[in-house]
Length: 184
Image (cartoon, rainbow, N blue to C red; front, side, top):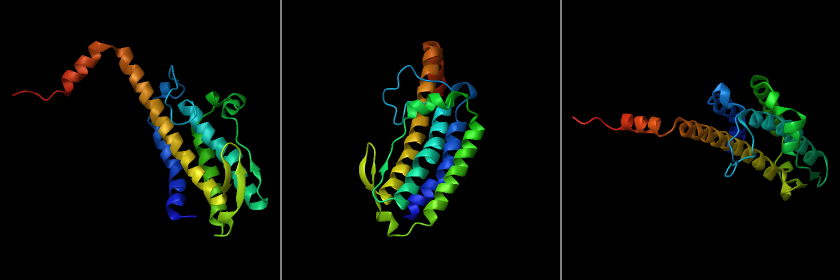
């Protein structure tokens, strides 16, 4: 596997934690009135953490093991909405979710460290995506990470916009006046 992808995968747990830390406590469970335009699944900040943890363990790690041990397996997609409800993501502890994800990612990287160039070409079928190689699966994992960083930024943007809207025009005009350079 290429060094850029592996380094990006290794950096993601720290990036995820840093992005989540941008959310004030009261915003961690906040949901916008509309999810139109969200670049990831429609998940609150805490749900994003739990989702990447569970997709890492129950999704990608299982897919990696199967593509290495089976010939042309069908790799199932996981139902995010069902996981949110069944595993009660909204009640999860973010510190525990981040720690569990970081450990799971270390395990994924340990699995990837043993891959040979020949294994990168192993084939599978990924439900919802079609035929792929092992190498493509790892690129999809890296892409999935980036989608969730974008999703967290999007939710934070929606939260900040909703707060500004709730503050009303008086606060906006005061903020605009404060942003104007002083005239001397």
